[in-house]
Image 1 (cartoon, rainbow, N blue to C red):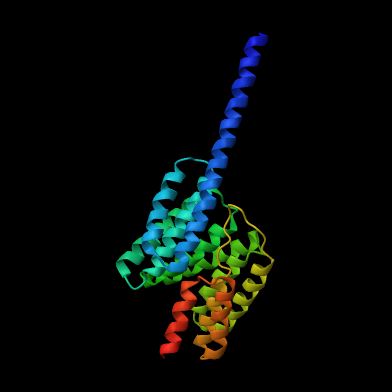
Image 2 (cartoon, rainbow, N blue to C red; image 1 turned 90 degrees about the horizontal axis):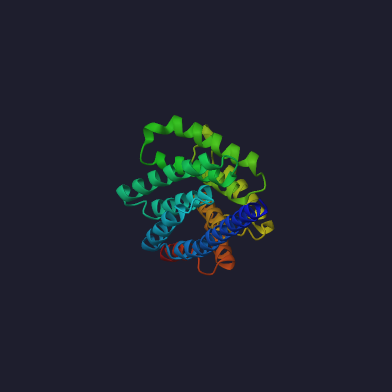
Length: 252
């Protein structure tokens, strides 16, 4: 009997060690993929994003933290969709893919604010291809961002994403440039306080300043906008988005 108990204990301990090793392996891959995603963002490299998508799809088969992997799959597809926006067919394809993945993430873990915030933005992007969904997506997007704020009221990405939505929503429907600027400013302050997030999302530290720049350009205040684009480059000297906009301004 003692021998049987010993075998059971050893077996359970071995299973526990293997599970821990598996978790560590998934975490290491996620950390590496986060670095790759940021590099792809810096360059606006769609092909790199596609490579990352393949890695994430393989990682999702591990089963551990599948909800988080699905978040990064959605973010990756969302990035492709935004970069390829001028190619309507490609952009729509990846935004729809992002929507499917983020819904899987939410189904796997409903209390993760990042997923609800990203879902809100994806729904907004979808409207560009399907304006007939205006009322439906508008309501869903509003509920998603409200839930994200409730779940994580100090999350800078939540406020930045809310700001992007407000920037392109008419005043009569609750949006407007000034509302967007206030949200971007709040996000910028929260980014300054954000500590190491490990395997969890930490993107956006430089993007929030690009968004502030974009908002001030909408107000025809280019000098202020330029200062924010330069601020983005102070945070991340490799920010290709800010560099491209500054080049455009120089040519105007």
